[in-house]
Length: 284
Image (tube, rainbow, N blue to C red; front, side, top):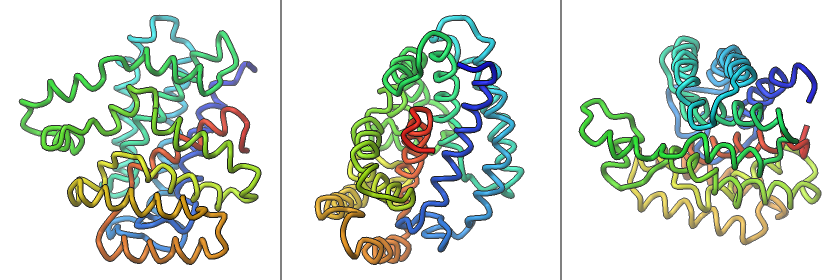
């Protein structure tokens, strides 16, 4: 890898979150066309937030580049940087949470990619294997948070429904991303010519399986299962390869917005999928 590879990886993380929000239309989500089911943020809020995160991704990359210890101790080194990134995000967005989940996921992935690159080509398989070592026991934190008074949204959902959310996804080595994100990105890359259609298609694939805590925090598991079923119908009918695909997505956007449904967890996993695609040079 070239000597400034860590800077390159940090840039890919920023690129991934910009590509995700620019993908339009998306059902219930902020995009270039509208705010979806969100009244407190718009496309420009995401631009401001993304810009504020650049410095933190660079600091994570730098920390990972100089780190030579065991994988299982790296996360504790990154947490203070992640907390500073959250503060920068809230300052840039007037206290709106745009990217808290993705700071966590992509922060871990930036560090893991750089660690892997010291010894081998950072393929998604190699990075995922490192992530699993790095985050082993992560969901235990949810169990130990049961007695906490000020619980995070993820901790509340675990207490109520037993769902492990993004912590479970990361600890599993991004299983949903591997099966419903990356595989679909690789298979659809040649049949869907433009990035926008490709990313909408991947988003819907992720929505079929993602245990989306964003949906559950606004509703309940039944609404999540309904969203998964709608996404499955869209994908099984051909997804973005259908003639009237954009019209269908716009109609789902209308329904989700009316019902205050935001599949933000799936959107985060889309950014993760895009990051892997950029690291592997599947997309540019």
